[in-house]
Image (cartoon, rainbow, N blue to C red; front, side, top):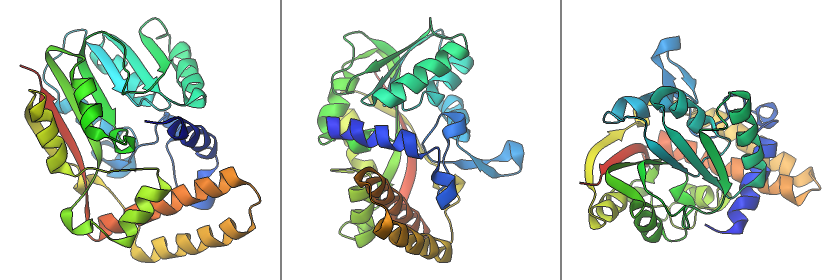
Length: 277
């Protein structure tokens, strides 16, 4: 990852607080910025925290694990896993803004002694071994996913587990305008598909133990709603005077393109779990 990614997430952290005013949603109140999934505990309404439940349900038993969150964002996943799994946690982010928010949340929850937030790239993780490494919608930002997977896998303890959750394009999406809009708006230089991750993990000696398609749990907007929000995006983009805000509007435009990719069955949202022997 680059420092440009850090700037992107600094801006994202500020603007998620007002995103709902433009119709984009967001998980600021739950300290998450990842995909919302249909939650059966509240009648199927999408929630940002449902992914955490599915992740914990998919993991083998862990006893007081040492956990690394590679791309921890605002810290919501760390807080949820700390309450569900016990253990100690390290979160990595390139965003100073996100790190401050995550540290404050850990402190308010009384978890400051168990959760350590560091401003650094996941391509240069702490030199220690972890029982669980999670990467939720973060490896998509890697300019060299093979290197990122290799470096993270090298930090797994024997029997350690890596869980990757991301938007993974279908082969038919390659070259499409929506995929390029998504990649450009979200600063995604490569964006691997499922097969690439599967092969890279096996090359590092990890055995895939789960590969869940979470796409049916998504609730993308209708094509009509997407078009209306794109029109609003373009209108606002023309009149705002600030480069940072225009960059975030580009990001949200990329998010709308992503929703259309899901509507057209050109994208999958997958949870891949692999284990070191």
